[in-house]
Amino acid sequence: MGKDVALVLSSGGARGFAHIGAINELESRGYNITSVAGTSMGALVGGIYASGRLREFEEWVSSLDMMEVLRLTDVTLSSNGFVKGNRIIEKLKEIVHDHDIEDLPIPYCAIATDLIRGRERIFNNGSLFNAIRASISIPTFFQPYKLGGDYFVDGGLVNPIPINRVKRIDGDLLAVVNVNADIPHVMMEPPEEPEEKGILRMIRSINDRTGKHIPKNKKDHIGLFNLNNRSISIMLNQITALTLRNYQVDLMVSISRESYGTYDFYRAAEIIREGRRATSVALEGLESGEYTGL
Image (cartoon, rainbow, N blue to C red; front, side, top):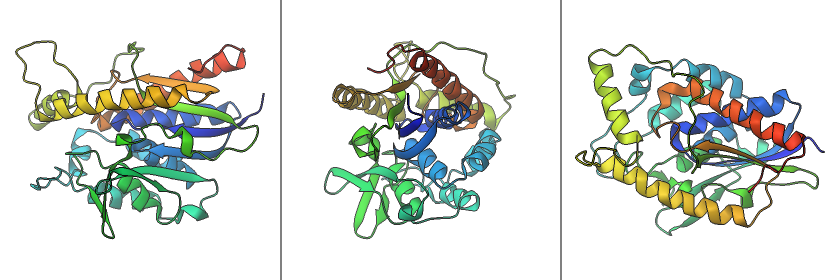
């Protein structure tokens, strides 16, 4: 069995930190990632990996707590999104200098949605950070990204798992990491909960309401973010299911969409561990000859 891998990384908000763990596990077992395609957080992690700075990025995100995440959130009163997104991109540029995509050591592409034309936009050349910023623009949360005369939002709206966009060479294994899988979540270890006082407790409450789906208590109000997240989640699942039916995936790493909230960015370290665990399980099935695809 070959060890070269064409890697596809799904959208999924903060759950996309699991992509870091997946990459770490693949490399630790001797797999060679020859190309990567990603949407939203998959585009962000994939782009940073392709630039050779994933370890530095992992160290940084693993150190974030709630307050640091809040400081990176440049809130605006604009009606087309609550967060500008400039602050996080500027911070990323301190860790990873911008590159032209065509100069990266491995083929990379990011998927965004052209809001005006209502179609997919493939970023496989030009500025890496333009591609990332366009792809991560979660509707109603991040403002759409204006590039020239065009506006871009999250690529997950049109292609949440871009198998058809990854560059493959004969003999490459097709590996997909899907962090929106419609499977039960099994908690492997208790989460490390920060001490909550004052504003931290308020932030936790907001995050819990925005990161979950349908409330168990019927009296609970679904709310704008909750409704938006659930609606997008249903759409992502349907598009993903249709996509996977058309491809023979050699390695399928699945992370439950119920495992972590879309905005749980302060839990990066444990999400990364979950990604590594799930990839280890999938690789054990692949290496033992058991079928792991869909």
